Image (cartoon, rainbow, N blue to C red; front, side, top):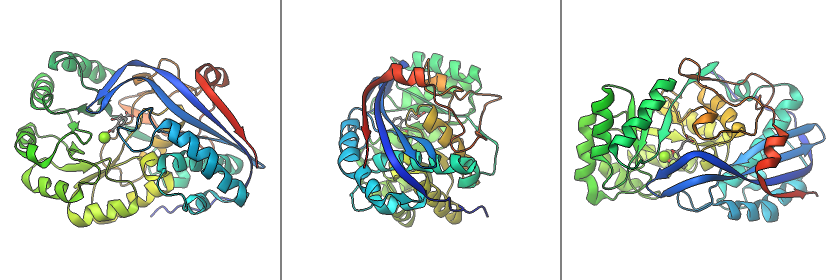
Length: 377
Ligand code: OSB
Ligand code: MG
């Protein structure tokens, strides 16, 4: 069984935070809103052993999660980074404990942890995938398709992704845009691996509508109810034949344990940002693997930084379902890494270089930076 082997400590010298605005190739619509520009924070940790990069995956508005970019920007500068400066020399495995006095803010913590982890691994020449326990050198692709103008437009969008080689399609749904949209995709493409994501848009009162989706033989329905609806998800799961998968609700290892104990999730979407980092993500993977619960790697429209780390995570043995693992070009015309992720034979390669295994394109990074701060002890 692969285990996470500790990395040597690093001494933190400074941290640079940047807010980026990356234009999306097309607007991305979910049940909670439409995004045309991805606002995200990039973390550059400079240590005595070398530098590392991380990404805080908050969005502009606190609609998917209570976290949002300006909140993360504030908490990182005022509380998280100062706590690390206080500790000064520490291993990546110590970061979560150092930041634990701050309640929540998991995306902010996770992005900072990733930068430290990358610095420490690069210093030792170790790839992130190997460190996390990857057992594959490439992972199957999957794409999350936003809500379109109408079901016909959705079919066109899905056709484009299938032509690019994506092996699994996820469509976003919301009340009024569920059964007909799903039917249109099933009718057009037959037995493709298909799943739906409601992003918390329903309540138990919608159980009859959600049960209509059972006839489409979906891989799963993702997060139909709200983040704190663990008991209601368990109740709904008993009404549906479609497996219920949780995304928003899985905020930590403890939340995952509760969800499994209650029967709220037959499948778990693991997103490192949402749970406070890649190390907590591995712990949730281990829990689910031992419980026989399939997991897959979710996404947050990551830049090349988070995309490289997600590919490494998705290569662990328990990730038995294709994740939201897409090419950089699915969202961006120009990424901030020199070799953006691509789809090859329906798969994305797990980087093999030290740390994240990707290099930053500094010119591209500067071009999309809208705010920058350098923090020192
Ligand atoms: O619910 O999985 C989600 C993007 C932003 C916020 C929430 C979600 C998503 C996606 C996109 O579905 C996943 C990706 O990065 O490809
Ligand atoms: Mg989701």
